Length: 178
Image (tube, one colour):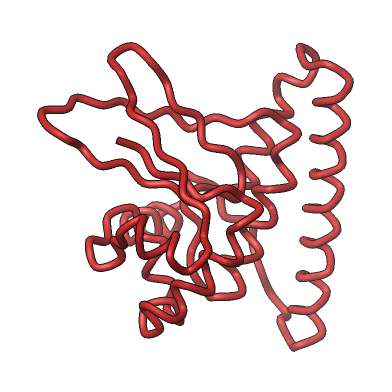
């Protein structure tokens, strides 16, 4: 069984979270993929005006969740499930909004937005014009943000830095820690 709150009601859902679980919203613990403390009855949400949609996923069918939606699934018996994370290039703008939200709460992103963007750009020749448009727009935004942040670091006194590649020991240590 799947439950979903549409993107247009995300702010309303977050407001209800602040009321029902104020201590966890501050720390963004509700983002955790498995957080039993954050389970709420769909009835509780609907009583507070949050629309909740449900569907039963049958064998062989797929469920697609759209950007800015909140969702959860509840197993009603024996279950073997597979999850695939994907998105079309025009959803990049939603990914960057999510990264900004996480950053504002000092919460680490679940995936590397920049790596996702670079991986998509590697196959740009096979993409249509709309996909190329959204990827180039997002790449421009990321480069602008990176430039601004670097200048901010330099203005605050950073005098030495170095490029860290995936093969570096410090990078491997950080990956193991996260």
